[in-house]
Amino acid sequence: MGFFTRPLALLWRHRVLLWQTTRNELRARYAGSVLGMTWLVFYPLLFLGIYTAIYLFVYQVRSASFETPQEFVALVFCGLIPFLGFAESLGSGLPSVSSNAPLIKNTLYPVDLIPAKAVLVSQSTQLVGLGLLVAAVTVMGHLSWYILWLPVVWVLQVMFTLGLIWILSSLNVYLRDLQNVMAVVILMLMVASPIAYTLDMVPERMRFILALNPLYYIITAYQDCVFLGRSPRLLWPLVGLGAGGFWVGHWFFNRMKKVFIDNV
Image (tube, rainbow, N blue to C red; front, side, top):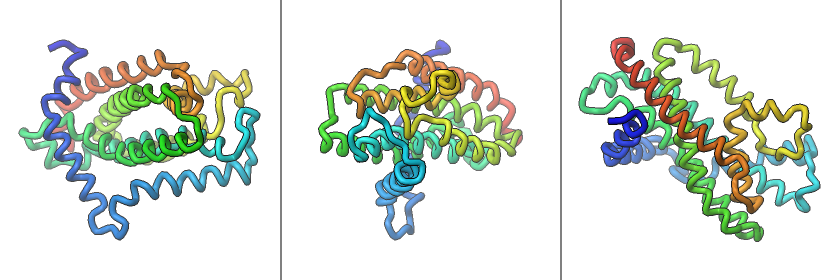
C-alpha cells in the first residue's frame, strides 16, 4: 500500500470502531454533568462573549470594513470556532497515547486510532459552533454560496490537526514536559492568530509573522467562505498544510510506535 493511501485506508477500514469509541468517549465526558451536552453550545458562546467584550470595549478594536458591532462579532466567531477546535484537540490529543496504556498494549485496537479519536471528540465543540455561526450569518444576511467551501476547509483543518497530534502524542511519550509547553503555546496562538482582526488591519511589515502561524491559513479560510462571501484566498497553502501535515504525521507516528509501546 502506498505512502499516500495508507493513513486514509487505515481510517476508512476502522471507521465503525473509530465512530463507536468517539461517541462513547463523548458521552462519558458529559456523564453526570447537570447541563450535559448542552455545554457544546454554551462553551463557544461563553468564550465568544468574553473575547468580543475585551476587543470591543477594552481594546476598542474597530475596522472600516464593518458597519456594526454585530458584524465584528461575527468575524470574531469565524476565527474563534476553529481556534477552539484546534486548541481542544491539542489539549486532549497530546497526552492521548501516554495516558492510554491499556489500549496501547491491546493488539486488537489500532494504536493509530487513539490520537484520531481524541481529535474527533474535540471537534464536537467546533461542529456545534459552526452550526451556530452559519445560523448567525444567515440571520445577518451574509450567507452566500461560498459557504459550500466550509466542509472542505473543515476537512483540511482536521487533517492538519490529526497529523500534528500524531507527531506530538508520540513525542510526549518521551518528553512529558510537552504538555506544559503546549499550554503556553496555545495562549500565544490565541494572541498571534487573526481571530479579532483581518489581514488588512495588520501593518504590512508585520504580515510575515502571520505566515509562520498555521492557524492563519485556517482562520482566514473560515472568515472568507463563511462571512466575507468569497473563495478562500489561501486555499492552496491550506491544502498543502492539511495534506502534508496529515501524511507526514502518520509516517512519523508509524516510525515512533515501534518503540514507544515499551515506554508507555
